[in-house]
Image (tube, rainbow, N blue to C red; front, side, top):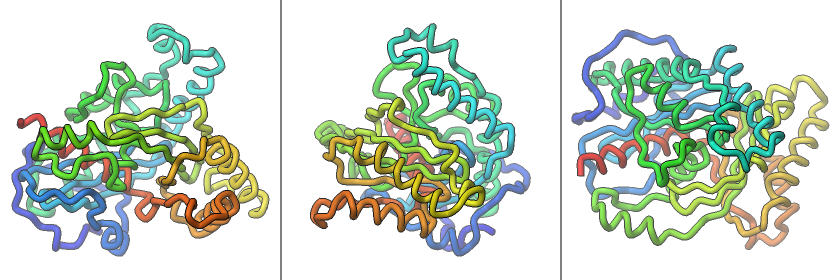
Length: 356
């Protein structure tokens, strides 16, 4: 089902031209769209008439969202991955383990390149499906056209490089919108940054005033947080330090990717054992291993809204932070789409900066 008709706008779309045929992907229900389409990003007093299009390429699924000309962020589609895509992402994760087994944080780029799986083709097939769904929605809403540019985020993996993403975008005829802080071959939009932006953090309030925006972002102080990405197959825990959405410091060595603790594993063992193991991982890798200076817990993933998971997380946090004053804030009301929404916000700003 499509989003409610109140989201019709007369806008000029910088990244769009011709309409394309119908799609058949999995789309959220009308109720889901109504409950997740509120604007959670910083309000901007004036908006150029262009769209920002954002994708999240997760380990097991992908999502798309739009940042509209009036400042509203709107979820568009969820595509749950097939076996080929999951196999490719699993290989990225496996190469990640080999990366640290070879002590490759000290390797040069040539040595790192030997560990790259290079699954751009698998990434491109998922991007093509997302592109198709967005184009169909735009066509149905009389906004029509071909998506020519977007921003996509992906997990922070040393073996997944910017070139992989650029190649995947090129295969489907799209441009990857992002202005990296450095010239690193691995500099791209990572999920933690997109979730950060999707929760309304790390971006200036008014990007149209370019110099004011730069000054505001330049003066932002680092935020330390715990990011929990919980899906059907994986539980990923990281502890990023982010100054603003374009500046991420994250140790992937301390990012355990536990396939045994994805939400599907609940059916393969006793529930109490499963939740006890999940509690232990979060405690050791997410909280007790942290320096304690964080104030936010960011949640993402299709399983992060499960009541049982949220209850375990709340119990753990209250155990670790008995003083209510020091209890970290949990940002997880829109865990499925928050990364795609943040990516859409970054895409919108990249288009505006280019015009300037």
